Image (tube, helix red, strand yellow):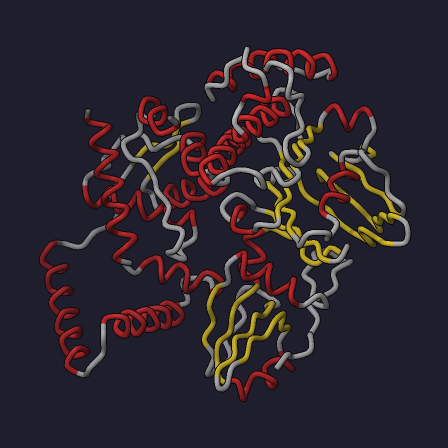
Length: 178
Length: 304
């Protein structure tokens, strides 16, 4: 019932979902889903993001959480609020060229093979990578320690979260196009 | 402006204190979760904030400096008691009519619009509505009064998962629209995790934790490291709760600032709201309170 109503009202290009088990703060999940949708082309320049009311009515979260996510997107230059109209996509996240990405992926795969040969299983690799990433973030001192591992963990592509958001973005786009 | 402010607030029933020496200053614009075990004093605090009962000691004001329970305060506060008390034999329309006549502020249009959005028929008897619909009706009646502060006592306790989600979703939509402040109690912390941005933990009639959720999260962390070094660390840090196994120990600590360095050999992880609340409830001696009245997180005895 509620879902039907949502699809009727929803004119935004994407719809958010939450992964309660991911450990990533809610506002960051929203930010990441927008970035992800941008990378995958579900969102483009000028697209309207769901209004705060739309988001809280579907996810049952605090409106301030959505506002925080949108502020963060504005801060990153990815979105801009237009008074009385909503928040709109403004840019795209800085992505590397395909060549660079392929090269990085190759190095990572080589590392994975070494780890595998050393007898490390998948969970072990993830744990090691996450810890290293956190230490790296700490060294750079970019992220406040209170949120450090949240942010870092958030920055790590968690398979479950990514699949989820992709599925969601795909579904939302299908609705938007239809 | 503070939506609820209390100093030295206490309530005694017979010889037992339901609430004792409570100091609170809840700023406006929050969704406040009031949590604690059964009998911690949650309902007593809510009743006093809406003027349903008076304090035995201390004072409580609402929405600036209105005395709780004064006509000026009541005009701007809506209260939904536990289990959504409604007249079961009345049709929904009569329930609206009744509430409208009992209150000075009333927005009939809004009430009807909400009910039609929720597909609740006006001619249906209240008793024939589902439990979820009854909760939504009670919320509608409260919101139609256009309150600046909405107080809800255990609003989710009798609802199934879908009704819980829908109730919270429509409550949050109202917050987004009206910018009203909300105080809601629950003994199920998981229900409130995504909704609340201000937390009050009551335990044994005392306010144990009060503060913005984000700040509380930033100032607490879980340190995991060797059990042998736990005592030494507990000497230096404000430890709220310790869980210790043979070789490993988990210490939930309250940091003095968000940028506290992690002790060498220890791993720091953020804590969840539920984890934080449970840790405090298990250590009645520890407290996290803001302002000059703060009892800094005390070093509690390390439990083996």
